[in-house]
Image (cartoon, rainbow, N blue to C red; front, side, top):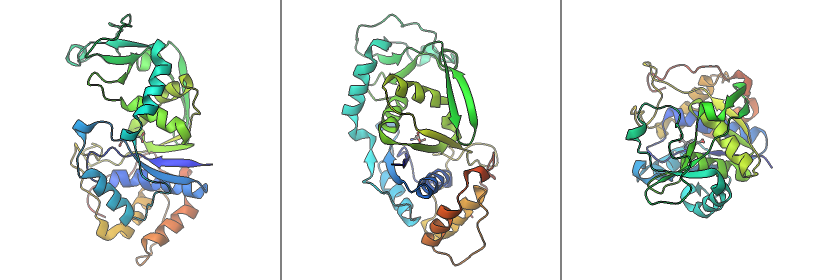
Length: 285
Ligand code: GLU
């Protein structure tokens, strides 16, 4: 069974950059005859926007991107993450270093590596070995990273007790996702996910990392850069625009409906046509 997911963090409304990821992952999975669903990565309440989930679901619905399964929420998976943590325990240590004390340091220098006793107010870090991990990406090709050099010991549970993105995502994707398609900003930490899956004996999905949609100044569309919400009243035009950004050469059919665009896209989708960079986001399509 082929399974893919779109996994937004509910920090703000769906913008054109997230529509690129949602549509590409949807078409890729649909073309393979698989199941596609929405999973909210809602494990960081301080960063979340209480209206975001509803906004995102409304926007996906307007664009015809219907989840084949019940919408999933990482906040419901604590037991799964606890079980994973229990398996990783012997490779973790308690770290009391503050973010401020590590400011400017790219790779954690191992200060607390020998702290195996649990203490309050500490983060849990996974020891990273001096080992190469390769990721054979469907868009970027094969790249190899040294875990210790590229990442260093990585936080898997935060000091405030919240699950780290890497642990939650590796556990959920390793659970039953066969194909992950997401933005290229996440490519550089994918070896952490692959390594975690390996330690947990989980199957590694096929990864494909899409070029990011950027403003003219080079910043990526995000909540921080105030990317505007997609306009649901012109969903069919948005789909055509995104297909065009993704290099799929959609025909000029001004009257096509959302369903027609998704049907065309599912048949026509070719990941090889995705350009290395996307045309900048300058104005509403
Ligand atoms: N939740 C992440 C985000 O919105 C994406 C996670 C993923 O696709 O792995 O940036």
